[in-house]
Amino acid sequence: MSENCTHDCSTCKENCSERKIPIEKLNELSKVKKVIGVVSGKGGVGKSLVTGLLATLFQRNGHSTAILDADITGPSIPKMFGITKKATCFNENLIVPRKSASGVQIMSINLLMENDTDPVVWRGPVIAGAVKQFWTDVVWQDVDYMFVDMPPGTGDVPLTVFQSLPISGIVIVTSPQELVSMIVGKAVKMANMMNIPILGIVENFSYFSCPDCGKKINLFGDSKIENVAKSFNISNVSKIPIDTELAKLCDDGKIELFTGDYLENMLDIIEKS
Ligand code: ADP
Image (cartoon, rainbow, N blue to C red; front, side, top):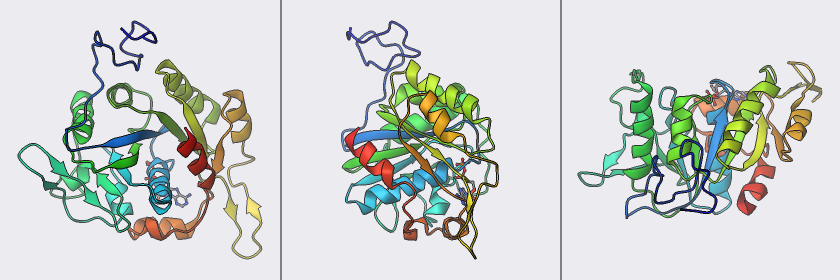
């Protein structure tokens, strides 16, 4: 038994011999050095967009990067990267992820569905099972950084995903109009329970810059994110404004052409984590 074992497999991340919820193993053709989870308290706050921007940033900086889209009921990663072709089989058991224009390896449920608009009407354990298979049954080629677009919230599915993948750190995405302190608090507690470091918080929809005078307008009132981050001992905060150019690039499947530097500070922190 590992000396860090908490004797409670539902929260412990140690992979000791007595573990009841095993951390899933990669297949022998795959290699992934570091797995970073991108989490949010609810859907629609920009978690997928942040996942896409982080992957683009890391790939651009010379890291072999991948995205595992674990948001099974709201998969938006392939569209953001303009991927329309389906994933292919490597052999009877393994799937080849698709590569984006800049070379990001991507696996998402939409790469397996016949129609992008088909809904996934599955119960929690089946959804969690699909995510585990994205880890075990996909050929991930020499990945330095894998970003996992986690299912939103802190319920059963994200918890199972947290327990099953070797996540080494998380980035929390929030928006100013959420009950920020409470939502961040829940994510922080979940990460702490599992001894997963919090690498940073991203406040999305943080402000809007007037296109005429450049003045920053806090549409949702003054940001509280710095204070919230401080209260949870998180030193790394990024802010993303409402950006119409970014939204258009995502809609057009061209997120990799975005040149803004909103998440630049995350690069260093994640590289050193
Ligand atoms: P989530 O993954 O949290 O459900 P998404 O990342 O899919 O949310 O974002 C929801 C929608 O909002 C998408 O259409 C996305 O392009 C848009 N969006 C997200 N963040 C921004 C932003 N900062 N500026 C403009 N549009 C944004």
